[in-house]
Image (cartoon, rainbow, N blue to C red; front, top):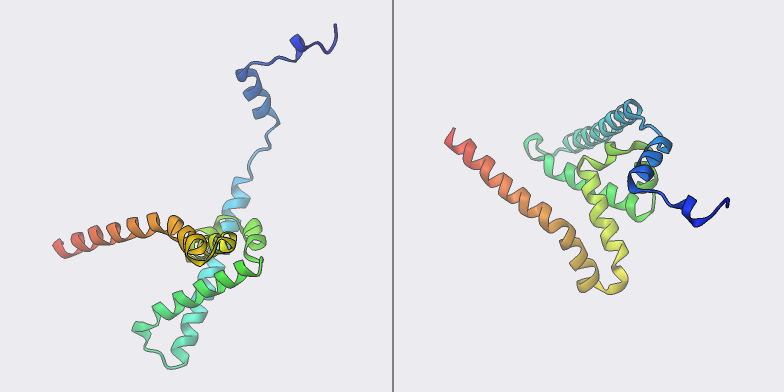
Length: 151
């Protein structure tokens, strides 16, 4: 009998084989080139911001912190306006890898849980995401500093 339940049964291996056959091939070269140029564009923007601070009279040795803060602010603003996700869909990893991706993650978590309140919503979700990153960043900085001091 056509269409009987016995004919519709499929093993897990057969399903994986069928799914792999239908899955589109990833556009690796296109994705890599897009990520390279979009990440480079973010870095170019950062350099332009840094040069602007220097032109405004900031000390060239101390201009890195305001530059990073400005880039983080811009990424957070774009996230709040709903534009960062649209940009990231096109650029891929180019926007996720620099500090802009981290700023987007924190801002998106804050926006998602703002209805739960400032402490239990925004504060808790930001630190649940950032906590592991900050911890590993501090530990890595400690070991890099230790190695630098020893050698």
